[in-house]
Amino acid sequence: MSKRRVVLSWSSGKDSAWCLHLLRQDPQIEVAGLLTSFNAEAGRVAMHAVRRELVQRQAQLAGLPLFPVELPYPCPNGAYEEAMKTAVAGLRTELSIDAVAFGDLFLEDIRDYREALLADTGLTASFPLWGMDTRQLADDMLDGGLHAVITCVDPAQCPEAIAGKEYTRALLASLPSTADPCGENGEFHTFVHGGPMFSESIHLVRGNSVSRDGFVFADFRPAATN
Image 1 (cartoon, helix red, strand yellow):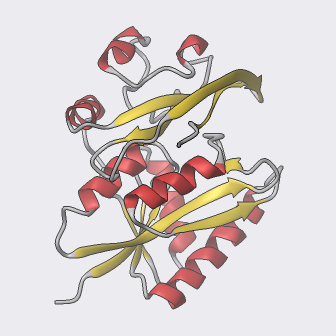
Image 2 (cartoon, one colour):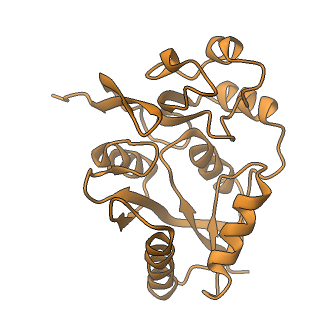
C-alpha cells in the first residue's frame, strides 16, 4: 500500500513541531515538506515574527524541504487565500501530495476555514492533534523533549513578561487560569529550538522585545557557529 503524502503547515511553533513528530510515527504517512507563510517585507513568519533563517534551520534539522509562501504586508485575507491556494496547487502537482496537515487543536471556526480553503484544490485537510486535551498535550510535549521559547504574547491575555522565556511547566503554572496551556486562543506563540523532530538543537541568541499591533514580540537569531 502506498503511503499518504502530506505537506505540513509549519508555523515554527510547538504545535506544528509536535504534529510533525506524530505524523512521522504513522507508517502510512510520508511528510513531503513544510509549508510556511512569511511576511515578505520583514522576512519573518506571519504572526510568530520568527526570522526566516531560523525556520530554514528547523527544516534542515528536520530533513525536509521548506516551501515558503510569500505574503505582502499588509495582507488582505483575499491575498492570503490566493497565495495559499496557488502554493498548495503547485505542491500537489510537483510532489503528488494528498493532504495538508495543520496543528490546530480545538477552534472549530479555524478548522472550517482550513477545510473550505482546500475544498477546490483536490487536497484534504488533516488535523493530527485535533481534540487532544491541551493540558495533557503540553505535558506530552515537554515529557517528549520539546524545547521552545515564547516569541509573541497577547498582553490582554497573558503577562507580556513571558515574551522570550522558555516554554516550561513553571511558565505554564504562572499563567492566568483563563489561558490555554497551548496558547490555542492566541495567548502566545512559540519557536521550537529542540526536540525529537530535529537531528540536533538550535542555539539561540535573544534580541530585543518590541510592542507592535497590540502584541509583544521577542526577537531571536541563531547563534554563531564555529
